[in-house]
Image 1 (tube, rainbow, N blue to C red):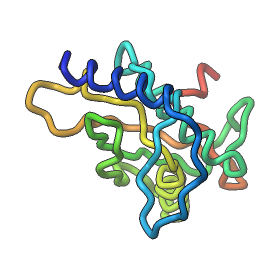
Image 2 (image 1 turned 180 degrees about the vertical axis):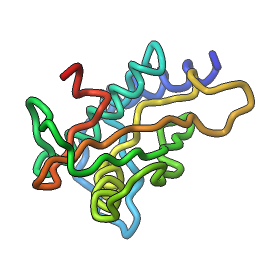
Image 3 (image 1 turned 180 degrees about the horizontal axis):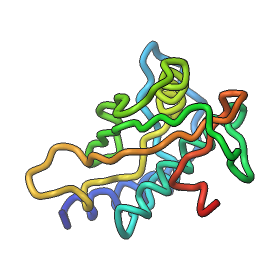
Length: 154
């Protein structure tokens, strides 16, 4: 664990020392880039879920809504996500839903995130290959969503 953090810190320091080079031509399957926000280490599971939820919301601005939730939510979707120790999304699937359109929208929202999620290795159980958690998508009448992790008390 210490070794992984040391390697990560060294990579960050080395990347900061490099001079800018012209952008490379896009490849058919680009690797998910790291951003400074995704290098944050969450102190606990709730903090980790909040970081992931912020990334999902940021990647889906036109598909979200803010403010109070409507009294009746037309659709609620619970997704199960599995993230590797480096923050790579390993799998995502619908855990609970009664609306196939909302399920498809929630899955698409997670897949729109073009950067790695924050590193999760320090939160993983011993010998686990992935960090597994769920996120709840709360949909309004226009099929825009809020994430339960960020919606707060209503």
